[in-house]
Length: 164
Image (cartoon, rainbow, N blue to C red):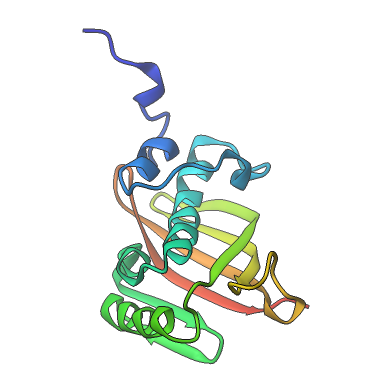
């Protein structure tokens, strides 16, 4: 039986569309902007999964993007470990972040080692009554992504700070 060439990765980083589908996330081809190499698209699936988790206010989906020892710096909060991140987001989605989503896109995306990539994004939190990111919630974020196995990526570190 012939193999569908669209499902064969061009890289060990994986096929973005398939990686997202494995997590029930619909690929947004516009999200990639000019970062369209197979490696870059695969790396940026991590951010698309986070955006999807926010849209669904799903703390489990959010935390499951992170490595077990992952870290999240969000506002004045520094969290270490997937379970601490899960609990923080569960509390946020049940409280002040209920109904919130995030919007944004990549500014950079670079594979910096065989199994490590770094991306910088811009965007922020969109509250339920808003249609876009309010100026006071605009952020820049740095993402450190590790390839644990072919087409298996995890977020080691996410750090956001106010955009100026």
